[in-house]
View 1 (cartoon, rainbow, N blue to C red):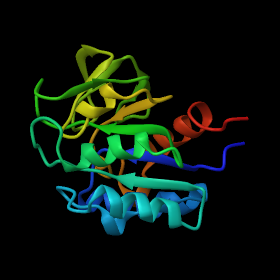
View 2 (view 1 turned 90 degrees about the horizontal axis):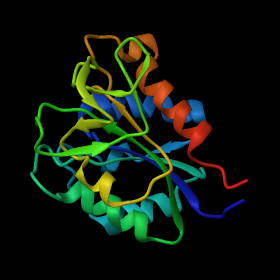
View 3 (view 1 turned 45 degrees about the vertical axis):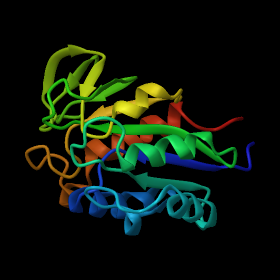
Length: 189
């Protein structure tokens, strides 16, 4: 078993994503660094990596967001820097869809639509399957294709998707994405 902190990256940092991840992280025995998230991310790579390393749990959820910045923005720099750090193991990512049509996209392992079904098609911001197979458009997803992660799960906008991922309902879409990552992404055993 690795001594490295295990990180799940979420490519969204707005208020809905923060509240959703603050709710879900403890259910999985993890720590959410929501206090360092924003839309766009303002924290530095150093701040985020120090927070990951000092987290009380071995599982840490990191929210990164470029708020539509084209190319590699602040959130993606953090992702790349964490990936290069030998004391951090990114076990997977939740790639959150946005309306940035074909400007930035990434390949994914699985997508989950707004009804909780796995699909080979990408999904839009509302979690509705789109024509593209195996890729998703998003604000902060470009760097995911530049690094080698065990699993990338694509979903619509966290905590939203026409209310189907509402925290009052237990955020079932985001929860399922985390379960898939933990089941297939991590654990060096």
